Amino acid sequence: MSDLLSLQDKVAVVTGGSRGIGRAVALELARRGAKVVVNYNKSPEAAQAVVSEIQSWGGQAAAFQADVSDAAAAQNLIKCAIDTFGDLHILVNNAGITRDMVIMMMSEQDWDTVQDTNLKSTFNCSKAAVKHMLRKRYGRIISIASVAGQMGNPGQTNYSASKAGQIGFTKALAREVAARNITVNAVAPGFVDTEILASMPPETLEAALKLVPLARKGKPEEIAYAVAFLASDQAAYITGQTLGVDGGMAMM
Ligand code: NAP
Image 1 (cartoon, rainbow, N blue to C red):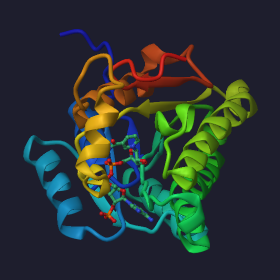
Image 2: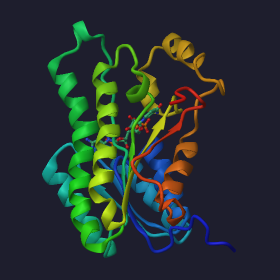
Image 3: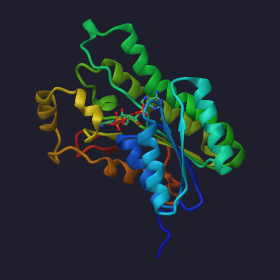
Image 4: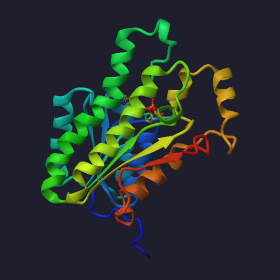
């Protein structure tokens, strides 16, 4: 069997790996042989279910609670991953939330919570991971951004800014660490069928789907395949990029 796109013996941390896209990413990385740390914040049972599924096929995984918007908790998550599996090769910054509201009604707290959870978490986890990856001269950092960060969505100034921030962060860090064989990329999903869409009014979602050339929502696994590719050795010459997995919504 070809070992193309294999992640055998790699260690990965997936933030927000308990549900939705993060869950699909954790499962896909594990299917390709990676040992996976499934981070969660408030869903211990869901995270444990992902771990149990991986273990049921003979894979290795562990669940760790950490609110990755908190710098100390993020550092501890990366430390726990290295202590548990002896190394760290892949970091997927996936944890994210929405708090949608038109700007006139958006609270300062909803602005701050979204920046902290989506963008500051990316800084927190990447900083801790890079410290280890620089020494090892190997790393793959992949952040889950969004078409909202590329095109902007009305009612999502906070979310769109956090996702555009992740894209800028990706480019800057990619340049900073390239010499040490660490690649840094983003994946920008369009509308993907997870619980995060539940907060969207159905008529808004229906109108939004009219903007998708492939005329449907994405599946979490379709994001996971792109992440697994960027995490692989075959993607060694790709860095600083944002890969759209959005049914053709944002053709940049
Ligand atoms: P989801 O189903 O709501 O899952 C969100 C995940 O993030 C959960 O596992 C949750 O863990 C975790 N999380 C939230 N806050 C956290 C924190 N402070 N610390 C650690 N984990 C935290 O959302 P999703 O749709 O899978 O979204 C995943 C990522 O994709 C997000 O960054 C989102 O912005 C991005 N994205 C999604 C879509 C879409 O249409 N679904 C489109 C573009 C981009 P707990 O449940 O354990 O708290």
